[in-house]
Length: 196
View 1 (cartoon, rainbow, N blue to C red):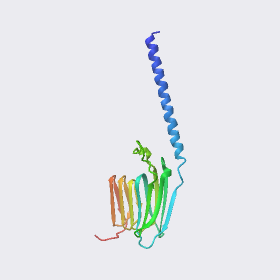
View 2 (view 1 turned 90 degrees about the horizontal axis):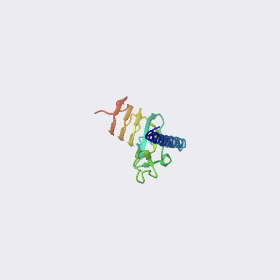
View 3 (view 1 turned 135 degrees about the vertical axis):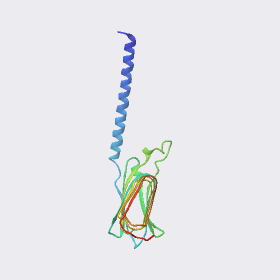
View 4 (view 1 turned 90 degrees about the vertical axis):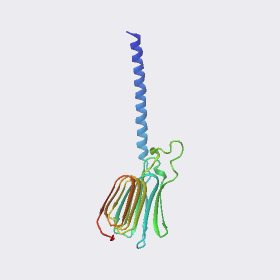
């Protein structure tokens, strides 16, 4: 048998072994990441009764991949549930207080995962599903960096600002300010609440 053929066959076999080892390492890494997601912290809740006409604000201005869903209900109160998942999920916090007569709720990431050389990577960003119930006639402001944002049946004054992601508003009143830098905006009006 030709010696050069044997040498080439041995190189191919070594390359195959290295490739198989790399594939096995990737599978173990992904399995570990999936297992880590099973250990996500429990949902964070906040509830607060509203004074008549009291404005409501929620902001997610830290680098959290938020999935915000706001739904109107017939109670004079606000209810928020934040369900953090993924990397650094245990660093997601929710606070609420009355600031200048506005009920203000802030979803933050503390301590910030953006440390070190690779802190800017998307991999270091936690995810959070945010479910919020407000009175249908609430004056509502929602400010988020990474969306999407959906608002259903809120007919009061509505301000939604977003940097990345889509905004979908259904069943709104006519006092709307919706803006996103990177993403579509879709809105349907169900009730005339102001005249031009």
